[in-house]
Length: 264
Length: 264
Image (cartoon, rainbow over all chains, first blue to last red; front, side):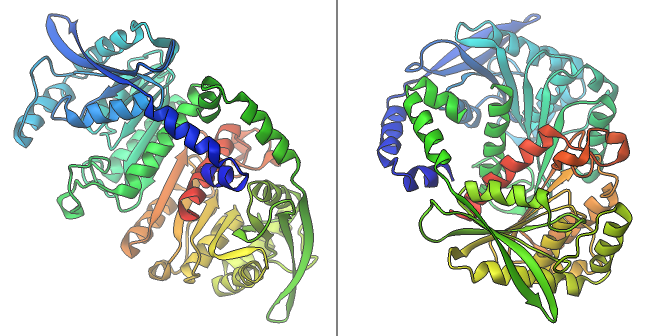
């Protein structure tokens, strides 16, 4: 509608101006080593070098195979929107499981130790908060799959940030009472046919948020299964995980709308 | 973010230009008499006379007290966005129940006769489709409360329109199998604490949409009860119906995003 409106009202030159400006952006990718306890972690700092000054910060938490090309691409997309991004590393430097069983095992360590998971997320958040380009009053965390679970745990830990967004993340937690600590606004973007996040988990999550009086919203995308934003997940819903262009596009827009609200 | 971006990139003059253009809009309100069977109905045609030519059409279906100031205001807001709007009349000319019991009784007639409800909705849709300013290939229907239920029934009747949006509408239907007729994309905007639309209705609706392979999405707004978009509904959630500024704003944006997709 926005472009439609601009075209109708004769602002076509503006469109070209905007396009040429975005072409001038210079996205910088910098690996960042940091520690949680004695564990060395390696995240990726991503920002647009053509933008001046401090800007809202966004933490991006990876899927169960660890920080890789997918998260790098999402971080780049966010940097192009003007955010200062840190792609977190929850697992540790060089820990990037390549197979499904290895990824499940690695993710399982943190699913079964939520305090460790929260500590790892907080360590990444601290890097982002301390980055010179971050406007510390405007910070959010997003995550995909395992990363969605992670940012929800970060919120439950009481992290003082503006918002968290889970994309097809697991919604269950062993400590729902910790929702009382939540300061962040919560947006859960959910594939309505995701076999990994069944209706009973959705219902429990909603009740958890409700009981704690959290500012929360959940979007259910019809026809979407797990991994609906992951371009490499194929298109076979019967496998339980598949890319869904419509849900990907809509959920990204929902995140942008959420950011427009919390970063205003 | 959009305005932020424009400001950052030095397009402040554009903001003022846009503001002055929208001030030039001339919203026209015209009562329209039409019939369904032998019943005379009176809707309201609303559009921006400063905009030239055909445009997407939006049908607005009223809450249980019938077409009134609330729906007129929503129609005006939609006209300002550039749409050709018809505020429908489901009940009949002059039938505008003033009390809650009278409204419940009137709405009940249609809740208990879905074929009549669909016929009344279709009659209004026909008026919109035949309006000279309507681009017939880009038409949607939205509704509030009783009107949400109505536009979902309109979709279940097989109406060949681009989309329907329900705001705190009842989601239950006596004929869920009719979802197989749905051609429209469906967006249900739901107050997560709405006592009139309990979790079992939400679950049944989702299963109905799923089984029929509909393109659907449901958004649950935490902390919102029934009537969350109605400015006159007060702020006491314990009454089961109350205005919720956050859910109102977010749901309106969700509708706009949906329109941007279906009217592209």
